[in-house]
Image 1 (cartoon, rainbow, N blue to C red):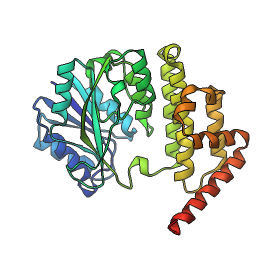
Image 2: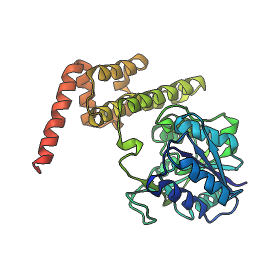
Image 3: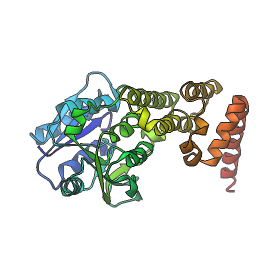
Length: 342
C-alpha cells in the first residue's frame, strides 16, 4: 500500500466537522491508500460516525477506538501501529485537504527520492475549498538533501507535521512515535523526527486547510495546556539527549527547549489565561534555568526571539513580581485603547 493517512478524533461530531474531514480524504485522486481514524474516547457521536464510514467504505476506512483518552499523540501511535502504507500522513479531524493533496506529495517524493515531503497550508474560517490566508510553513533553505546545517534549520523551525508525509521505513527504523497524554505532542515529535529524514522536498501550494475556530487547541489557553507544552519541551530535550543529539545540535536543542518550555508558554499563559498566577510564572523561569542557566546568551535566542520579548524576559530575571505587574498593566492599557478605538 502506498499511503496511510492517520486521523486522531476527539469530539468532532458537531457542525459536520468530522464528516467534512473524512469526505475530503475519501475524494483523493489516488487509489492505493487507507484512512485510519482513531477515536480517542469521544463523548459525542464521533464513534458512530466513524463506524458508518467504515461500513460504507470497507478496505478504505479503518476505524479504531480507545476506551480511555490518550490525547492526539496516543491516537497517532495507535494509528501508526496499524498502518500498512509506504508513506504516512496525519490530518487533524477538524481540518481537511485538497482533492489532489496526496497525489502531488507522493509524486514529488517519487520524482526526487525524498523521504519527507510537505506543502503549504491555508487558514480558513468555514468549510470551503477556496484558499484563505496562505502560510508557507517551511523555507527553501530547509529542503533538498539534508546535511547538518539544514537539519539545524529544521530543528529550529520544523513546521507542522500534518502538512507532510513521511516514509514509513524511517519511522520504524528509528522507533519514532509521539508522547501520549498531553497536548502539543507535535512540539516534541516534529523537531526530533526531522533529524532522522535525509531528503526533504516541498510542493509550493496550499494543499492543507487549517480550520480556525474558537474551540481549537491554539485558541483556548489554560494552565493545563501550558503545562503540557512544558512537558512536550522536556520530553523533546530528554529524547534528544538519550539519542545522542546534543553534541551536534546542542545550541539548536537548547534554543528550541527554551522557546517551547519558557518563552512561548510564558506569553501565551499571560495573554490567554483569565487569572494568571505569579507562582506559575516563577516556576517557568526556574524550570528553564535548571537546564540552561545561560539561555539568554544563546545566539539563536538573541537573533530569533523578539526584542520586546527579550526585554520582558530580562525584567523577569531581575524581579518576577515587577515583570508580572508590568505585563498585566500593559494588557489593561491595550484593552482600554482597543475599547476606545485607539
